[in-house]
Image (tube, rainbow, N blue to C red; front, side, top):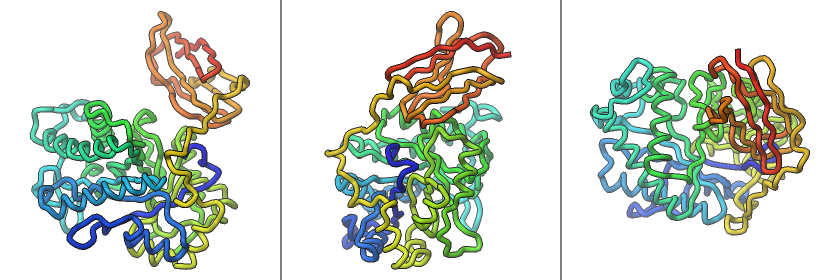
Length: 405
């Protein structure tokens, strides 16, 4: 995904019905949304979207619900074996199991209040003995078990939990930004550290202007934009305004995807406008069949700018393509107006770490792949004093002295 970001867009489609006769898992090519795209274009989406919506909740132990979740696992494994990428959402049903809802409003809302498990108003820590905390961690642990199955099978997953939080229509977003971030970090910590899952690429949803809801770079790999036209319309524009807004609000250290939507932007519009979404993912059902016509799918999936499953090399044949950066990676490293200014000439893996005068590490400003160009990293959250900041790549490192006023 890093190799193709800003060069091409990866095709995807969301699914709903994953069960066939006798509640047996459907093969990927027979799933109705996938089959529709294949029939229209003779090409297959490279990313397959499934959901843990029936994995937790009051009906968790019923056989149909278990069969549904197991079918999503079978599909995830199959698409990965075919060289594609599975992505999971989680419509997290009321952990108290008093209702079967995940909505905070509407006709069948849940009043589940996760903040009742917080020790303080900022939800900085949790009352681990509370029933609410135990209900949430029970559900997280159930999901961890399914994800561990995929990890054992060598399957990596685009993982999109707690989506669309800032909209407020799901219970996990109904209490505001600060508690939400604590909940997101609880899910992250429980899956990553407690259960040791390392096969998850974390996709966090933005509405384009919700910086206060952002959990932080350490908890997010990809920023996804869910976008629907209201009132609903068929529109294949590039959504360049949404793309640029996310860049301006969140910076350029993360890939940006169109993680849920209706009409798929036409590739020629994406190219013309420079809307470099990593991937597209239309919602299932009539968003696939009505918001995108048969001729639309034929045009989109057969465009050179679009990566389909048929273009994927297969994971057994793939090797990481990020070569060690050349020795002239750095253009400059300097501290100015409370921020570290760092520029480089190529895409490279970068570590930017802060040390006190004793040489003890006191924080990480950034760690991961970083695109060519200039990047700013604020040190305003550090206490007044003098620090050393070390910027390091595979072949270079440089340390600068900074004074935080």
